[in-house]
Length: 629
Image 1 (cartoon, rainbow, N blue to C red):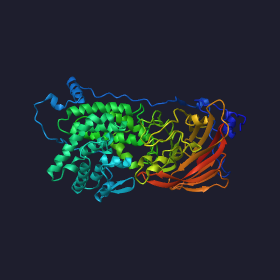
Image 2: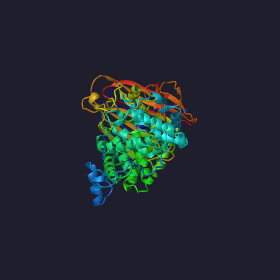
Image 3: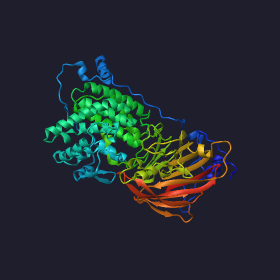
Image 4: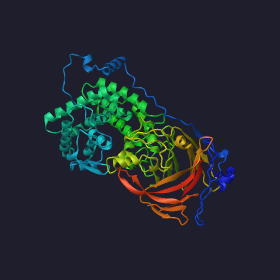
């Protein structure tokens, strides 16, 4: 039903309108009616947005992320010739054919800057792989044959467990376990084939782990086993030289190039391989990283993986006392700020693109290992995440299309979802955990965790804003996001605020509607206002009704008390603070939900849902989250 339009001042004062005849515009629109609190708990109004005191920051819509271009290290003419010869398949003996053949050997021992998980290492010594809360007996693992869940594949075939074993006890107590598992794996995978063990990403991680944690598998008394392990290492590096460009994903290709470069540093006669690996690595990173430092998959887990790979590669350079290319430090300096931008006040990760809440200890250790000291990126425009820090409160906002299919690994339909934390407490979250399938989160559930409904945003008829396909891929849906970020100045004792407005076209093809979301965060961090609107994207609105649901998934251990009028819910946080959520018009219901914690385990939580049936011509919904005194 259409209502007469009101002035901006009327709307701020408490008026209302619908979006029946509204058109999407790049400039910000005023926030609609503020929900009313009870008389003893008044909501503090925000000042009207005055164009004279607002710093506008319109970000142009973009259908794709720009690529960063990195050049390989400068080389002398002779080194370029060596690199070219190696690239076309001529080994190091080409330039010295009469040199004596030598057995494979390691020329240095690496001290890793990134320790593993001692708890997982202890479980290995007790006979179990431990991943995302699930214990899998080593004796029951098939090291070849059918596919395992992706996280287990990366752990077992990528030999990430070597770092965990190395971190749990003194080396003499761990070498027997490492050699036993390594031996079983070699028997099950005697030669390269089409099994998951020989996916380029797994091979790259495996070779890097063998090189860095070589003392665990080469310190035993069995000389034949040591020789077998060294020959397997050399054969794997040779296979990777020619297969790295066939990687199934660009992050996997980066892992392959890092391993090739590390093998060139640590294996004998590796100069040509190192030069070849450095050039390929820079090209792959240029294809992976956007101009603001975010990886094109938009996944924080991929961002972490790439940073870890480069940190480990720098450790390999240090082991042979060779200076790494200066580009590595520049790339790390580019990668760290976007990662910091998706951390909450507790220092742990937000739940974006399948990620779980990776612990603050792991994140802090990784940042220390990079040696980069910097601030979070406030507006990672191309990576697509907006961050608002207001005193102790932090808002993280997904303001970009999902990754395109060729970049997505655990892609989620999360456009215009947000997370909100205050201090160490997470209040509004996304479910997360789609990348943890195979642990305590089943694969079928992980598919559901990628949907729009698993994120704190609006859905129409429970359809995803972007189609969610199998194997972590995404289909059609959101292709453009318009965003406007600006400051609202305070007046007198009233604090200012930051205002974010964004809209996407994910529901345009099916419903002819555009979803617009406005968030206003007060500078003292005690109030978050929101408005969700459905605006016609075509001139002639469609008839009929649709079911709309706005979901606000809650953090763990929050006690809830519904209000008497059905429009509000009181939230009691573990830190003792009390917040109130209010809807401007429709009832708020409480439903079950879950959240993936720092170990990738599902934690039972709840969600607040505002559901309504509205005309297909569009509607506007207002809500407010406020800390009570």
